[in-house]
Length: 167
Image (cartoon, rainbow, N blue to C red; front, top):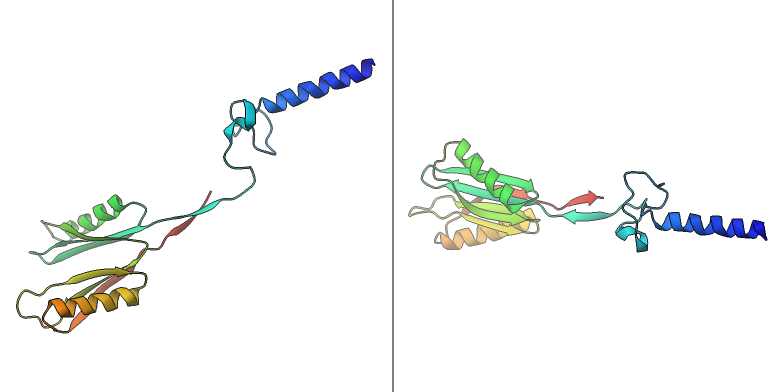
């Protein structure tokens, strides 16, 4: 009877000590990865030993100083703000003084089309689409219609693609 009581007491104590340490599976108490004790395993969201992945969006931007004819671009930023900041900074770095943001795009491609022989105030066009071909085609069509049917050419293309993050 004494053995059974000792065994039962040890079993209860070991279960109680396990329940009070919120450690991921396979990690012992005292490890920095252990959280505070409590019911339900301490609120761990991710089981230990598993790799989780997610897609993180990326941004691109274009900034222009129309008077000076300077353009700055950026691509592959994790925030819209950083993409805008880099595009304006690059525009200023090459001599633009009144650089203004003209376009931002996320997880897509952008194309800039300019008229080849427009006489009166030529209008550039920026378009985004899932692929460079689609963005270029759309930019050329709109550029031609906005510039009285003149022929246009694509002068810039770039894409931002989401990045796979492993956690």
